[in-house]
Image 1: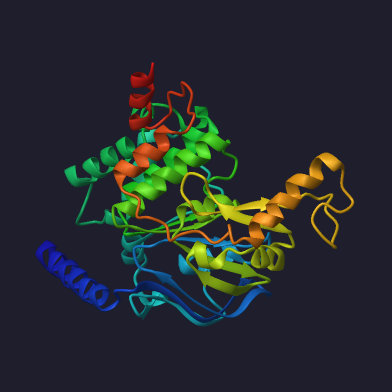
Image 2: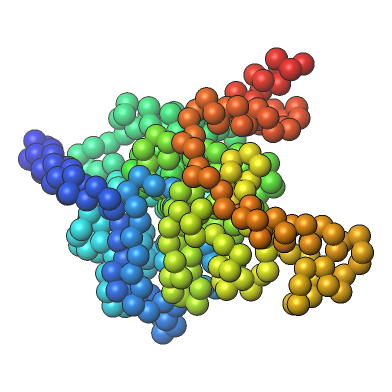
Length: 353
């Protein structure tokens, strides 16, 4: 019976591999989907593709349907009409464990069982691989250990999750997601409740996963983080897709005002060259830069607007970040004596001192 079960698993894996070979550009697709909760419809006739092995971020104002879309893609919500496709096949048609081996989700809020320790929580990421025929193995142990080392939670393994700080706890949840070893990782507002240092630490970690070949999909509120880390944006408003594409092509002052109701400049990030959103001074009047504001503010806005007219907001195509270039970028940041800084940064700190 065990041999029969293994043959079935091998056949399924082979079929999935063949499907993936056919779907080189996208593995996840939402097609003509109407999505909502009970009788409340959030999005109607929604269609969008998630590029394969891309870092995709869904952005938009509060209540526009970002998390609803992500939950539908993760098969947490079933569309009222339409469908979500995984490798060209309706995701609803797959067995639950098979989906869980391909796709992992970190929701907005995650509650750990009371009294659980870090290592035990991370180990729950291996649940999709457990069955009557496959109990805990050395492979599972190795996956958990690797996930904890990657997220720097291995030194917390014996701690109670309830004793951890917000940043530590979020890293533990990401470790559990990583232990699941899925090629598709979905994270709903993963930086919420984290301070700015831990936000960027987590985003760097997700970028590492993407560099290793994973498809990463996040929902973010911080537009600058979205543009800095994602290579593909999905912009939503009122339950619909406004546009999709590379941040360099998508993020414009007009789009920021249209979608978020905010007048802003879009200028190159001084470190990465990616678009950075700078809100215009609220003292500025509709008629022109600097009108109706104090003298000491007027020149700043006027010069910035002048820069936009010279085309400063149009950046060069982003260079491909290599581990060496990211090390150089990160080392130029002022991390101070933060013991949580990445190893490359801590090393540069020691050399500088």
